[in-house]
Image (cartoon, rainbow, N blue to C red; front, side, top):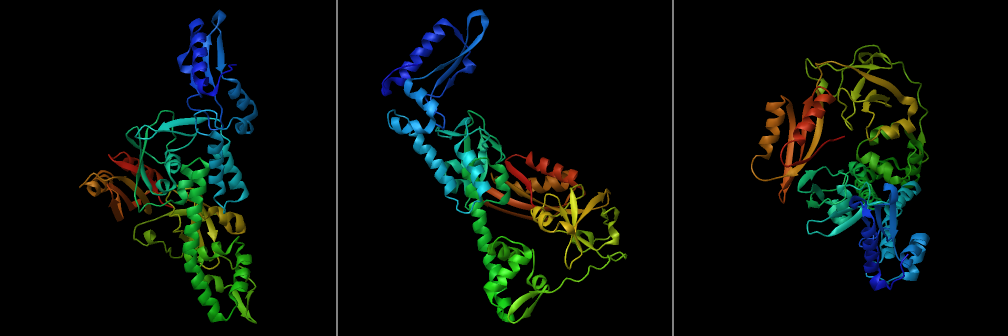
Length: 461
């Protein structure tokens, strides 16, 4: 251990390193310099491995008394040594990371603990650089999108594409030491639910959840207005009526109820079909005994199955699906090959959902008794609508031509709808395709992703 004044600590540590390596051969790849750039928890030390007597590897740790006390006592020791060296105050930096997690008042206990651990208690880091050469330190496992949020929250919100070492990468690309990261933004870009799967740090997760909850609240205002009009017409007290509906649908908050109505997961007509008004109060109508499912073949209402010659075959509870009235859920657009299940609705027969549908967890948890097993009977004749989201760099004329040529001419796929908009040299588009199965869809995603200047290609749920 070295006793040195604060201004000479770094010099003395490197002198000690020089003495050790003059006597024993070092392994350069094992050198760890946490003096020049301390760890996020304040740990400072110089680590190396040398070849000792008999060819044995010996690890050497070089640090001053101050560094050793901080290593032993952690953050508590920072108060004693606050401001004694020329490094940024790691204690304040750690507190800043905690504040970022605390800034999200809507996170529940589990989310908070996970974010706190990811943001504040990690032990390993990666060191990456901005295009100007500024070093940034993130926890090991952090992604390119985490880097965007680390630079600034607004940059994270509006991130549309990312280059690492001058190559376009997915937003979920995991950073490694030495990466140079360049972020491109668009004022039209905004976070989506999928972004939570592309980040690892607590700060990024908290910020994305915060903006998603605000979006739910904003959309929920539309559902609230519709519900208020209906209850006013029925002469039902709004607050009491909302409490009845929350209990009936087992929802956690009014925002969830208003949002459910706004996105038409439950229409006003569907909701009030289950209630009657007595003495200006909503009263649940006793549920009728479920009728036996009809045995005759019914018309399938999903758009792609109205077309002549198109056949999609399913088995529901080990019986041919033709015996049931069913439609394909538009919230997740199942494609042949997806893992699926059937959900018995109150008034619209069976809905076929993807197992990875955003609504699947809620349906299975709240209405497990209405869930039925469903599986595909694979056929080459079926056609399904799938929607893709594409982002990339717009270098001029020809973007649309390249995309449509790859899909239509090279792969022979029918494009049902194509929208695209660009800004500041970058573009974002959505394409609806007719595909036969998930294998064909995945190939389309891969082929488009291989095109020059395409940043991300993702399936839209």
